[in-house]
Amino acid sequence: MPEEQQELDLGFVRMHARRGDYLTSVEAAEAIHRSGEASRQARLVFSCLVQMPNHQGTNKEIADMFSINYHMVARRIPDLRKIGMVKALDEKRNGCMVWEAIIG
Image 1 (cartoon, one colour):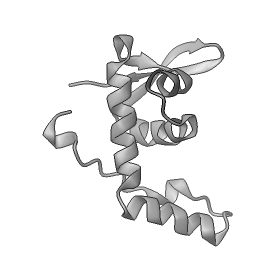
Image 2: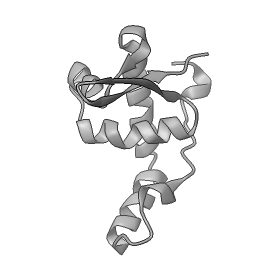
Image 3: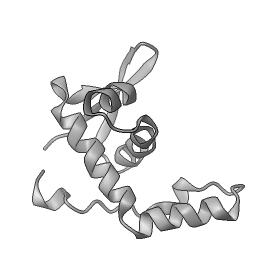
Image 4: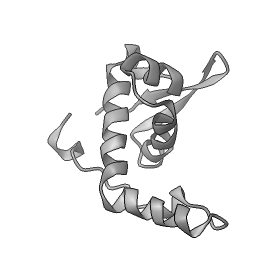
């Protein structure tokens, strides 16, 4: 992965906790952001998607191919979409949205 992508600024921690969430959920969202874990997970998911055929896959395909947690993939894909690193295609596989890594 290029050096400039080593640190993803996912500076939208509030997206991970909704207004009506319990305080513990808000604290957990802030902690995962502050610790850099959300960024690390996003880099991992992006790296996996880049390695998929045509740089495309569903959350399930990514999780299955790389033996990573489906829910982690499903949480990080919207983060990557928000910062312009993945896009949704007008295609579904087995009822699931297909994502494509934006490279270059």
